[in-house]
Length: 259
Image 1 (cartoon, rainbow, N blue to C red):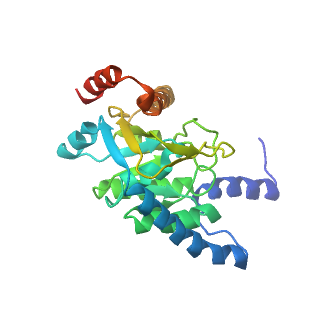
Image 2: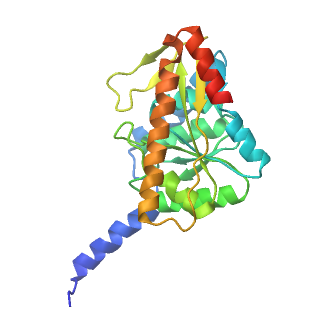
Image 3: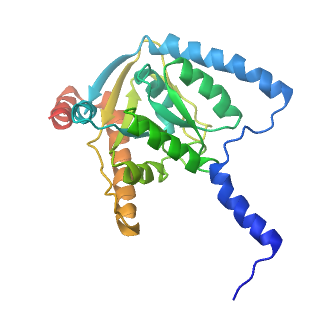
């Protein structure tokens, strides 16, 4: 029989508890002073640019159909398009998972001012507690969403949170991506963050819902995760290439996604 020493037991508890730990980290006074300043600046930047964007929607009927059927959505999208997504889904009460680190604290102020709810947690800390909060919000009739490769990557590698939440709640996953005609890509950022230019056109592409059975085992969960990854890549490719396509190809895609 294998026996653990006291330090080993403590280490095991610490590894488990970190997924429930949503305490705010200790920040310097300078960092704490920056949070409200960056929060207000980010809010006005989103409002200023976002209000000039002109959106086209492909596949948006999937969300409408879910709501008509009394279902809620578990949204999933790549971190790259977070700026456009924040504006696109504002004012709907959507609950998003938000980290407790410095970036998460000022981001929370931005998105809550734009009509979002937050569940504190991430893939590295507090994630299980965050998922529990999101499950309750889904039961209350509120949509939720994940920046699925956040908070720090790897870029375009989907984390399992939406699949776990879909199995637990019976609500489907809806993946989407937003591409913009004109914008600046931060090449040195881990997510290749895309900041739209003023008055740019934008397109949101949403895939059909992905359901996860309540009794899904490991193999089924892996299949659903792979299905989500593939759908995320598909909507990204369509949205990112949209404004480089000839009009006849765009019309064909409109027919395909809006059928």
